[in-house]
Structures are given as structure tokens and as C-alpha cells.
Length: 572
Picture (tube, rainbow, N blue to C red):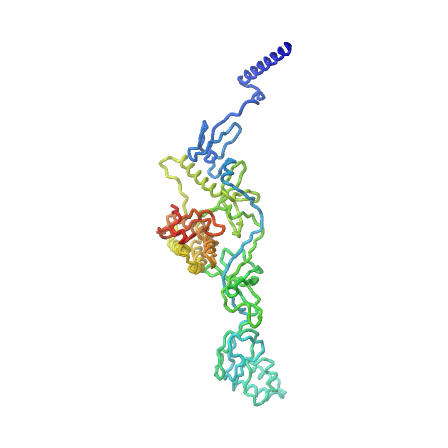
């Protein structure tokens, strides 16, 4: 027992001596690195994760946001001080619910809703006129809407000139002079008889005084201009016949949609006269000529129109709606929710790893239903933020403001981002467009669906005029393109649908208005308002939504009379 105690004391003494030796060796300059292994890492400084330029030698909280400062140890780089990079702690990422998705090379699809009219096939439309003067003895077809077949008699027609020429043919029927007979036959053809009618003249009774005018094509009589007993002159209109077996649905395609549209694409057509029925057709022709005023061209879709129980599916000159199913080859595309565009420049945030999110300026291409083509700024494989990016963008804006404030002398004003001044013609176009946007806003604020549907038809032309006015100015033209892309408002059947249609149009209009206010344009009375609880306005609505007004009193278009004064003004 005594021996064991001595061994214990000896071991303890050796351990104390060893520790003393290590301490003395650590204190000496040039001590071996292996001797520092057990030493705790030293804190270089404390830094704010949200505002990286805020640093301190002591623990504490950020003087801007109040967030606890994060220690930066030896060997660590610390948080990026760039105002375009936001660095978050793991806890902040969870709290903000930051979510990302991979940018991929994938097909781009879009559903284009259009409106137009259903007309007959122009190549199967005939106007039947009198070849010679005469009298209408009898009508075989006496009403508009009658279905006729090619070669069927329409009229019994008496004409002295026609009767005399028929007698001349009988007179030369047995003649050996073929030239003489050919001349008579040619005159009969010019008078309007068919080859079959001319061949039958020799067998026609000699006392027959009339001839028949036959239907030149099969179709429907769309116009009748004569009555029995009526005298007509050469060239006078008798009938108009259209073949309704194939109909043309024609709609206007705007300049920004032409990159999508091609021959052979499927179009679903519906019309109020056939509730619940959708007929599929394909695009057969795209007019190469654009209207200078609207910057739009006509697109033709052919529809089969069978005759069933004496009635065709489509009537003549119907109003109709169409849904064009558009597709594009595989491109780099990201979800719409990943893109932020509150001005002329679109941006997205890319996950750089380690809690860092970089702000990237984007060059956008075609806009699909849920995806948008990215030409520059994001590459395939990048993880882009789709949720929480608005908070990141707001933080990046604050970072730039605080950074510029700390870097610039107090007497110097911070720089402002400006747009080219608008010309007088551009300001006029801007005012006209904003007046229409204000009127649409007022209609929704008043819960007036009928007025909204009428004004929705005007947005295409108004956006096209704005696009034309901004030609030559890249910055303003980018905004006009966004307006055009969002101006395809269609008529709806209830207010929630109308507000869902209005949302992208209002978002683009607010971006235009903010840019106009920034450029100090002469737009008196222009105001921007924000509703903080728009998520209940329609299915899929965001938490907040903005709109423009030209009046100072708040008229909320997202809820109308239910909460007319809900919202607050967004200052320039």
C-alpha cells in the first residue's frame, strides 16, 4: 500500500514537471507548432453577418440591425463586405425560410391567351353578279342561310342577249365551220353559262325563254340582293356564297410573341355561343406584315366546321377566345419567383455556399408560364433563391446605402441611379398609358367587372403605343417590353379572376411608374400604393401587392368596396 502511494506521487510530480516544461516552451519565441495543438483558437474580431462592415474587438450587437456579432477566428476570412453579397447564419436562413432551386437547361412552355373572330375561308367565298342585263323570272333559293351545292340552280333568268346567243348556237350546230361555232361558244361562256349548260343547248326546247344561273361553289348563301320579277343590269350583285365547311379563327399576335409562334401549333378555340365546348385547330398562316400603330400581325387558325342536323358548329363572324400552346427549345431557365424586377434591371440571388448569396443582374429572354429564359447572369447548375429573395434584395439595398454613407464625406450627396429624360412625345405616351392603368384600377376598386372587361381590350394597343414611343432608348424600352408582356388581359367572369389577370399588369406598371418618378418626368399626381394583405385577393396572390393611382385617396383594387382604403403610399 505504501509502495502504491509512492508511485502515485511520482507520476503526479512528473505530470506537473511536463506541464511546466510545455508552458515554458510555449512562452519562448520560435516554439514548435506541435506544442500549440491544445491551445484555443484566438478571436480576431467580431463581425455582423447582415452588415459585414460593422466590426468590433469586443462581443456585442450590430449597431444597425441589433443582431449579435459573430466571432471571426484565426484562419477565417470573415464575411464578404461586398454590398451585393448577403451572408446569413444557418439560424437566419431557417428563420427567413430561404429556399433555392437549380437553374437547368429545360424546355420553355407558355400559354398565350388571345381573342379574335371566326370568319369564313376567303378562298371559298364568291360574289355572283349578272353577266348580262335581264329579268329574274324565278328564285330557286329565296333566303339567306340556305345551303347550296355547286351546280344547283339559283335563278331562272330571262335575257334577250342570252336568248339570241343560244339561238345562234343552234343555227351553227350542224355547221362545218368550227371557228364560227367556237366563237359562239366563247360568247356563251362570257355570258356566264357553264360548259355543261352550253352542251345541253341543242337539246333545249326552242320555246324555252329562260336560262338557269347555277351555284358556282357549294356553301351557304350569306347575302341575297334580288327578288322574282326584278330587272338587273350587267355587273349587278345577285348572291354572295361562302363555304363554311372550314372556318378561319384570326387573332392579333404582338411583336414580343412572334418568337414563340410558328406554323402547325395547336390552338384551343372557345366561344360564348358554345359554352363549355373547345375546338382544336392549328396555325396555318402568319401575316408577315406588322401594323405600324399596334406592332401586331394577324395569325390564322383553320377550324373544321361540319354541318350537323342542318346547323354548323360555328356561325359566321363569331367572337372567340383562343389558347395557343407555345413551346421553345431547351434553354437555361429559372422560375419566375426567382426573379426580382422593381425597375429596369432584373436580378436574382445565387447561393454561393457557406450562407453567402450573391446578387446577379440578369438579361432575360422569353417569358414562359412558370419559367423565364435567362440569357446572361445565371448559368446551368447555379442554385437560385426562390423564396426569401425579396428580403435578401432589401438587405442588399440597405447594405449599399450604408456602405456608401460610410465611404463618402458627410457633405457629399449619395449617388442616384438615373434614367434618360423623357421627350415630350414619350411623356405624352406615358400619361395616356397611366391614365388607362388608373382607369382599370378604379374599375376593380369599384367592383365593376363589366367596365374592367371593356378596358382590358384596350391594354394591347396602349402597350404597343408605349413601346413605339420608347423606341431608341434601351433603358425605357426594357420597361416597355415588360408592359407589353403583361398587357394580355382577357375578359373574365368574376372579380377574383379579373384581379389575377390584373396583377402582372399592375406589377409592370408600378415598375414603370417608379422609374418615371426617379427620372423626374412631368407626371403630376402619379402615386404608388401598397396593400399589405393582398394574399386573400385571389388564388396564388402574394402577401402584398402594389398599384398606381393618379388620385391621392386610396382606392384598393385588390379588395374593392370590401376594404377600399386599405393600404399605404409608397414614397419615391
